[in-house]
Image (cartoon, rainbow, N blue to C red; front, side, top):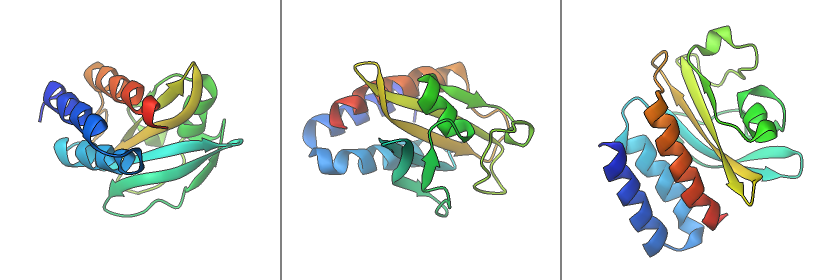
Length: 148
């Protein structure tokens, strides 16, 4: 599936599904539509931590709670900027979830400039994420901000 088609599908879900199911449905679409996305999760800000919400992948991560400022996810939450890591083995911030993970992208979900959550995606392929992924996922994060 291409980015535009996925974006339209997500927009439709946001308009036709209750807020309680939107996050899981969006995670499912991202995971199922993009083969290079090997694990997709949404973390929500709770106090000074990121708490894992809906996710989809081959297995669960042990990182269900991450302090803001820790790891790639915590850095994205602290700075409010997308973090794209082409080689997780070379990034000292990376909190290892799966041995197969080679690259990661984390996109903050912001409401009125405040980070309220984030989209975290791992790939088993090195340097899997492009500028097109960043632009697309930032649009998805903007859409999701209305449902958090």
